[in-house]
Length: 226
Ligand code: UTP
Image (cartoon, rainbow, N blue to C red):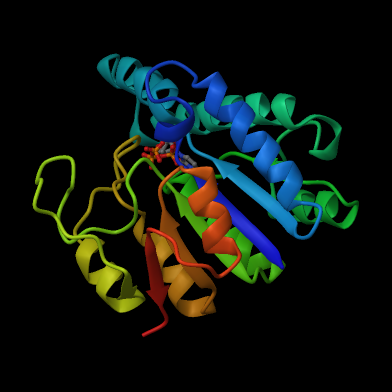
């Protein structure tokens, strides 16, 4: 299978870099790449938010803040590349074409952001569409898609499955500000909708992610085409 994983910056850099998790995740990706063609898109997390917030205080435009955010996502990609080693591309590719070339050369692709105006979820969804991926996985620090913010509402219910149309309805009013994307950005959801890529949202637990990929029972949300 061709698999694209969008890993939230909040998983990699919740506060400082979670080196223990990066190591575990890198080991999982190397193992996965023995059977599958794997691409990872890393988010910016706290690193992106700290730098964006500082620049915004000095009056930087939202596009400038996005560019700062993209740099942070690439820093995180570089750390994951170091943890994976030679099986990954040496530098995060800046375009989908370069990512595809690395895949063609048998590498695990690890990249960050590309252009201003969306999050790395958007990048991962476009990469998945571009390379004709069989599976898109969004890994974040929540277990999947809830009917309400689980960090604010303890009664929030996790969807086992949900239609992409409903996801788009839930996020259609969300912000486009740098560093402010929530569950998933609208661009990512629209790309998933138009391309019909199989899509899963799950938490960071490695065993659970393995189960999701192997089609076994897992905790998370399957996004249906309709
Ligand atoms: P993230 O993908 O981490 O954004 O990119 P996020 O969803 O807000 O944060 P996580 O998932 O919790 O980590 C960080 C920021 O970098 C810019 C955006 O401003 C984004 O919020 N960015 C990233 C872009 O403008 N373009 C990209 O391709 C990627």
